[in-house]
Length: 408
Image (cartoon, rainbow, N blue to C red; front, side, top):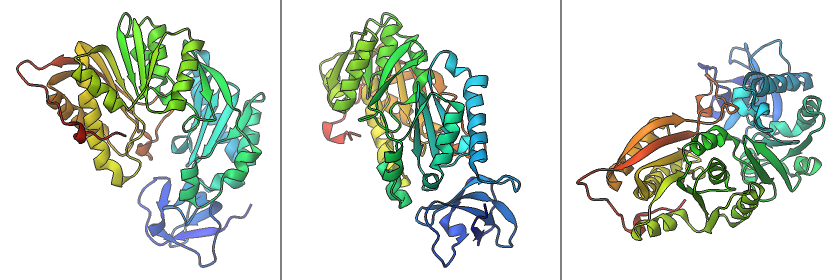
């Protein structure tokens, strides 16, 4: 298949798979968003093949820089075979869980594409317009690798707006079921596709849920921003004395309650803003053994970074104040624009303001089925910090006014 040729007007000095619009010599004749193209340098030398979209800030998403490699169904199948081999042959995730991330965008050589496997349901989430026209390649390749699967396409409306296209037609062709039940380590979880965020469940916390649960035997656990209940349920199955889940998303809490029933876990769920809940705990002098803070992404663009850092600081200060002396805090940030170094700086300040000292004993990230590439370090987005919390003798705890808090 002969592809339209797009040339660059600036020298490309990296192997990063994104080429921004300012580097591209855009053709005078309009090229539809998501067109597969061949990319050449301003001198005419071959650079690669990928997806072109002038409407997006990311003008070109390179899929290959191998001149002998052509964009076709066989190319997609090969990429998916490599991706499956990592998850099953290398990591062996299928031995303990029937769910994993099959494609993690750039790290698996498919920029702008996420694919999650939930038991027999495989959810495709395209971030790029380029996958609309080749969705049949993706679906047929997935059916080759997983013959009994139900492949569905679940795009995000915000991505459609950014890409300047309509994903609705392809999502109607490959509709999503209402729900499915998965097995993750020792848990059974219902994924509610009608109300769930992203592809339906946050697989990136799999190892962190398991690691945290092993620290919870005979402990009181508070799961803040609990979503559909994964951390709290995992803790109860590992022998926690009690667990409370807090979230402002009422539909997520309905799913969490169903998941608790599936796992015979007696968990209390509270529909309230986490900031308000923690403030009430502090004011009443209530503390708990284990606190989990796993808020949704707070910084989706550079303009949101400062506000996100303030919010992370506020919520962590509150969380630290309600951990019993020697208790455990697991605090997470999935905002890729905030580095691990910056997140740790936020925690240091929050600890000082809360009048505590953190004994950090583990820092992790996303589960290994969410790899990142040396040419795309942005793929390393999740930070998960495990720490014990001790009061700092002689320092008065800082309690800001309620007006200083920013709810996410």
